[in-house]
Image (cartoon, rainbow, N blue to C red):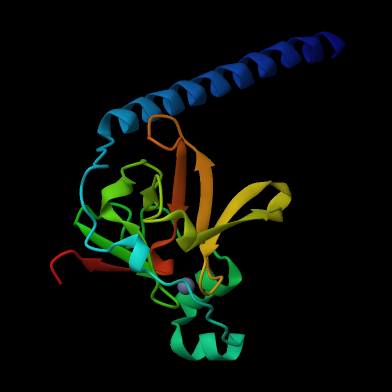
Length: 186
Ligand SMILES: [Zn+2]
């Protein structure tokens, strides 16, 4: 029995290492594809000039938010929920236009900085202007993550992660339900 145990341990370790290695390889491959797929359009003009956007303060009670938001949007925006990957409206949206805060309507992100991350959530490497969003430390689930919220109403949008291959080195991983997209020509 002792011998068997001794045998089992190294085998288990090898399997674990093999699994980890494979995963890493897959991850690497994903990142490479994503980097190649990144379309950087920093020269493109946004239909919205950030200098003209006034960031005020929108203070509503949770009761008021509940009245104007769908239950799903309320959960994301006001309870910092996360929608399902690949099952949301904008993760693969390639239309040109502006993404507004789904709660207060502040213009936040442009299709100019959106890129395919392969994660299943709409990903941007920057907002239209840094003043439009705020960063907060999120320590839920025993993790330290950077939460990104609307600067005007404080609603949860998603998280910011480091990301190689984009101009800012970071990916704003957002929930489609936290955003309202309006195509450029409308
Ligand atoms: Zn807002």
